[in-house]
Image (cartoon, rainbow, N blue to C red; front, top):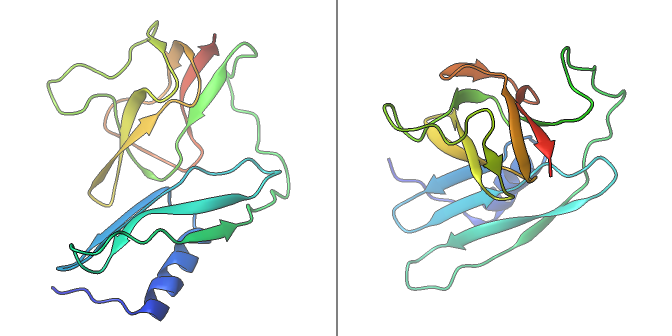
Length: 166
C-alpha cells in the first residue's frame, strides 16, 4: 500500500495527533517517514510538539515543524489510587497498551523491586497497535512496587510502578 500525504493532509494529521493522548506515532511511505513523540504536559503549562522527522525525499533534509498544544484542563482531580503510598511517586501508563517488563520473552526484566533507576532509563515496554514503545523514567529513585503483571493490558493513566524518589 502506498501512502501519500499532501501539505493539508499532513497538517490535519498533526492537528488530530495534537488533540489526542497518543504519545508516539510513526508513519512511513515509500519516500517519507513521519515520527511524532511527546510527553503529556503538566496541567498548568502548554507545550510544543516537536516532529522528530518529516522528509518527503531521502535526499532532502528533514523538516521540523512544531505545533503548539494547550493541555486539557481536568474537570476534577483524578481519584486516589487504592494502596498508594505517601513516600512514593507513581509511574503511570501514558497510553492504552499491553505492559511488558522485558524487551523480549526470556530476557531479563528492565527493572525489579529494589532496582535503582535514573532519569531516562527504560522501565518497561507498552505495546500499542503493534508498536513497542519504551517507557523511560522521568525520575530517579528505587522501584518500590510493580503493580501490573507482565503481558497485561493497561489503560491510559493506570499505575504501573511506584518509585521512592532519590
